[in-house]
Length: 287
Image 1 (cartoon, rainbow, N blue to C red):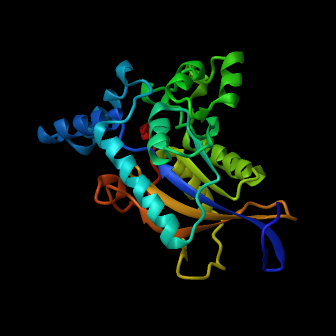
Image 2: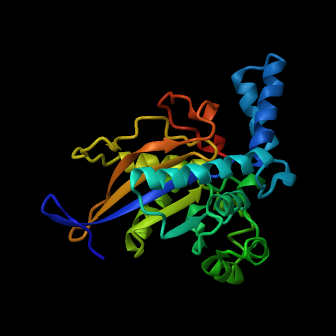
């Protein structure tokens, strides 16, 4: 499928809704650990150590949404409907979702009537070895989410346990995650849909944001196009919209435009504050 003519090049244009999952149980545990240490006068380093430590709890494996998270996803669903109507966007042709429980629950609440929800392994969170970053076997989680297509992941799990049993060599750093972001952009370019929604995680969205900004499009025109100069970290249930242009003739990275408006139900949360510009250490990313 070829898109419109742009700058004497035929390009395929895609509109993509990027969404981070709503608040999950491990997010609350992280906040509690940090707040407890802070209340006792602990330093930022001690707060971070406490946050990491609480994520080692096996009870937090593949956690679901909190009640607040469910509310966030419901608010985001209404905001998405308003955005589609007010901005003249088309609704997503397909919703691609990480196979972890918190993203699956967010997708179900955000798109309750959508006929095409597909679980995609590329969208999972960075594998850190923490229980919260590991997913459940597709044969089990598919029973909880019958509206989601798990075909590709079920085939993977039938041949290997690598997707749902962590091995030491499975650990990913930010560089590995950035390569996965490149693979994701390539995959989106090969898919036939013109409008897509991705429900995923903070780590992958941060690296996808950085991959996109590594080749800025200086030709952006119009009031609804801009470079995204904010913190690349998404808040819980935050949604941003991008437009991706794939050159139909030349092997080159796609051009990405960030669209306005953006929506976050917790715009005043710590995850939405301005970034220092420093890259997050690999070992601290777990969302």
